[in-house]
Each structure stands twice: as structure tokens, then as C-alpha cells.
Image 1 (tube, rainbow, N blue to C red):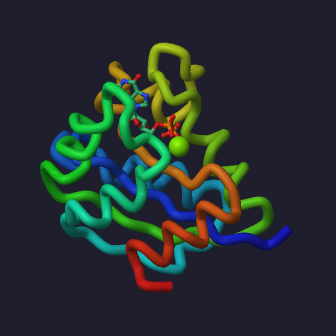
Image 2: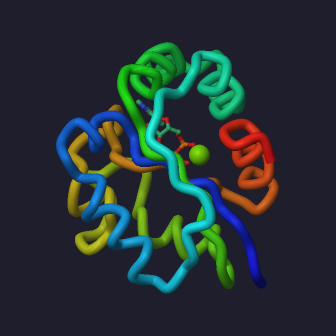
Length: 134
Ligand code: IDP
Ligand code: MG
């Protein structure tokens, strides 16, 4: 099914100079880049994006991390875009992420796991609204 998904290259990956290789992975699938922007995440956007994690032990450090430096915000679209991107990203913890996945190849820790991607078409719609206003 034709879908859109929200992808974000997190501050640690931008700081390490990994924008191009990470975008290449997504482009190589054949998905279409509809929106692409470098910029900061506001506290309000971070809280809205991670509302499901409020109250968890890592919540405050997660908000601090995602607002700590520039990120790359993207909307990608194509057949099963949400699932395709989640598979490409790999498991949340880079230690569990398979080689060949973005987190498996570029990440080391759960706190700095390189990339965010919507987990469902409903989340994608909500996140695109948060970061691009629809
Ligand atoms: P996801 O990014 O694969 O969807 P979620 O469980 O939704 O994973 O968690 C959102 C983000 O919160 C993760 O990408 C990671 O940056 C951070 N995170 C999740 N669990 C932990 C944890 O146990 N410790 C520290 N950070 C965590
Ligand atoms: Mg998630």
C-alpha cells in the first residue's frame, strides 16, 4: 500500500557526518523523498513525538538528546514505506540490530541510535503533522 513515513536522522549521526550515507540507504530502496529539511527539534515537538514514553526512566534524557543539535527531518513515500524503513533501520538497540541495517552499521548505544522512523501509518501521519505541519 502506498504510504508516507516520517524519518529523522538524530543529532549524533548529523554531528558525526553521516547524513549522506544514511540518506543513501533510504534512497536505494526506491522510496521517494517528499520532504527534506535540516534543523533543530523544539522541546514541544520532541514531547509530542515521544508522548508515548512520558514517565519512563529514559524520557528526560531522550528529550534532551533529540533537541541537542540539528537533525535531518524527512518524509518518504512509496509501497509499505513504514515497514520498509523500519526494516532498514534495524532494532531499537544497535547491539541487537543486524549488520546491514542503519542502526547495526552506524550505532553503538540505545541513547544514540542514529535514526527515528514512524512505527505505523497512524504514527507517520501524526509525526508529519508535528514536524512539517501536515
Ligand atoms: P524506536 O525508535 O525503535 O521506535 P522506541 O521504543 O519507540 O524505539 O523508543 C524511542 C527512542 O527512545 C529510541 O529510539 C531510543 O532513542 C530511546 N530509548 C528507547 N528505549 C530506551 C532505553 O531503554 N534507554 C535509553 N533510551 C531509550
Ligand atoms: Mg518508537
